[in-house]
Length: 366
Image (cartoon, rainbow, N blue to C red; front, side, top):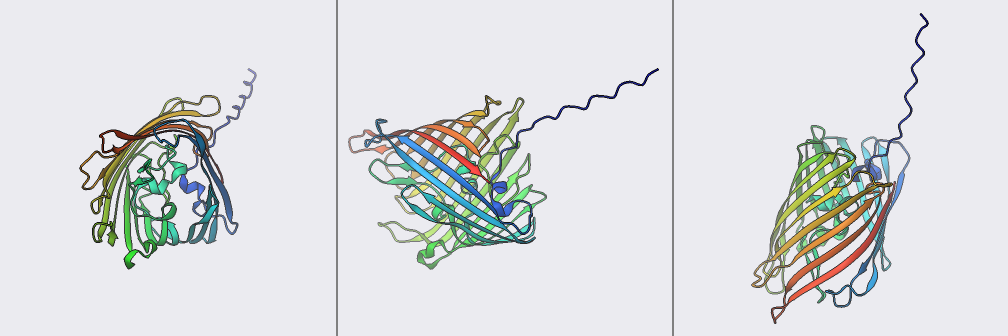
């Protein structure tokens, strides 16, 4: 018998590049490539429909035009340098990160300079790697005040200091502990720490993600805390020790066909004086469809609430509804968000509210 004909080799299958994580997109934390310096550019732009009366959607203006320039690399296999600059709408520009990193082993790193304050998932992910466009905890008041519920951090979540951190058992447990000068407030340092415990796929690296955009199955718990002497002041009362504790739970599950589901929630408690925010929380749910056209469609809803200490009236809350089109995960996406905020009731008992529609886009080149 004649031998059977040779089997036809399988056709090459094109594969989509997985969405980047924050760790992969930061130049100095990519795999060792000596001695070149890596560079990257990240851009975000948004416009908003909102009137002078913030409860009405009857005007339009640009809300943000923001860019980050990233540079970094390894000096030796255990020493890296990161230099990141940023600029925003209105001409403001400055230093975002200036880090010398000593990476002795996966379980122990020492980073120092001007760097991210490790305290919660939202700050570690940054705006580029979370599903909502805006950070949690910032409610704009039509009267000009902003109810800002966030740990002590600094501009863009950074501050001058040093952090020790490590990934244990390949990212099954991670710790972060830092001390910062916090701008020299009353001469007392800010101590900040966080623990990260994933139960499904591992999480590794200093930088974090608010979503892995379909790349991982995640069930992860973050616990963070801060303390600073003389760190909580108001006009009405003397200073006191500032402290906060926060908890975050992120669940993300891939769905057959290329989609995924995300649920996230966080709670914060602050030791503050009357008139400041003592408690805040948010819960978020999102679903990304299988590929439609060149990307995934992702609707999202997020509810937020804040408590003002000593407040006899109503406390502010907010709800956001958004739809994203993820062309390349977080590396290229467009987003439309409707936001409704109830801030408080005025002297007549009427609710003071704010409404807006925001159109946004971001791109990451790295």
